Length: 81
Image (cartoon, rainbow, N blue to C red; front, side, top):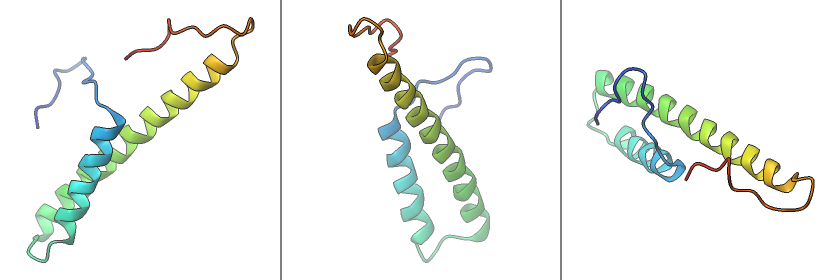
């Protein structure tokens, strides 16, 4: 997997992070995974989990902002799709 250039953030979806976590779990469940590979997968899993949590928190904030529009209108100016 390519790493983004320093200072740039790769746009990753929540679904992609969950799929990556599922791949990691399957790989860790394999009987033939060695310790070094298992540790690397674990580290990758923690990073993916943290990114997924951040994306979920951002989505929750977006929902709250939309629901809290003072005049009842829905603004999508702050959405980054």
